[in-house]
Amino acid sequence: MIKEIPLIIAIDIETTGLFPRNGERICEIAILKIKDGQIFDRFVSLINPEKSISKAATLVSGITEEMTRKAPTFKEVAKDIFNFLKTGEPILAHNAAFDLSFLNYQMELCGFPRLENKVIDTLLIARKYFNFQSNSLGDLISQFSIPVDRLHRAYNDALSSYRLMEILLDKLKNSKEFKDFLMTQDSITSLSPELNNILPFWLLNALKNKTSIVFRYIDRNGNTSTRNIQPKEITISGNYIYLVGFCALKHDERKFRLDRIIEVMENIE
Image (cartoon, helix red, strand yellow):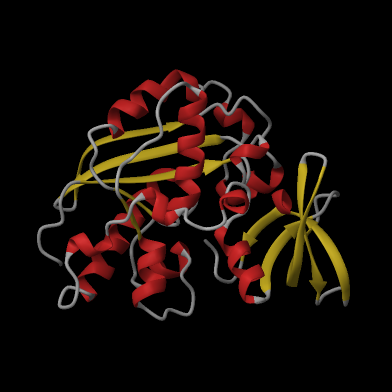
């Protein structure tokens, strides 16, 4: 493995939806302090989001409202989280912009300052230095045979992201130093500020490059289907954000609520 990987804080969160500024909240968090490949401290907890958890979110993570009902609220653990992270070591995550958008937003709601830790994003490393068929965490840990009980639980994803980082950095050890992978949070979220507050990167990327998206979708009746969409635009109506695009299944232009997208099947972030 690449030499001298310093202490790193691997994080992952599970949420009730995609957009913190649209009222969605964290429902599970894992923060792992790792040195020389070994976890020496951790903060792992279900979080009571103080709101309903959609069926779509439960299908992704398996986390139900019943599981979080007796868990602490984010406000009750915000100080512990802040103290855990304020030591300043680099934060590691896969698609760090998503995790940090929720974490910073909810920390600020509780009166704590925005985190300023440097960041290592295994998604961005995979995109920049490799040419994998898919950069999703699930596909990459499968490709490299990283053992995991199940995806989309915070502890498992945080630890898997660290193991993935070890592998990617080892493959680049002859051309890169560890410091080359450190980024500021501002550089990770340097897309359009307005859109970046509400849209996931995979959607911004598809709109920018005019590429199709394949995802699993749950309709108002609870039925799921796989859709191949050529995205056209984003619209906002009431409390919901919609993707408008040509649907290959229906051979027509359709509108999809983003909070009902269960899983992006290609280029998932």
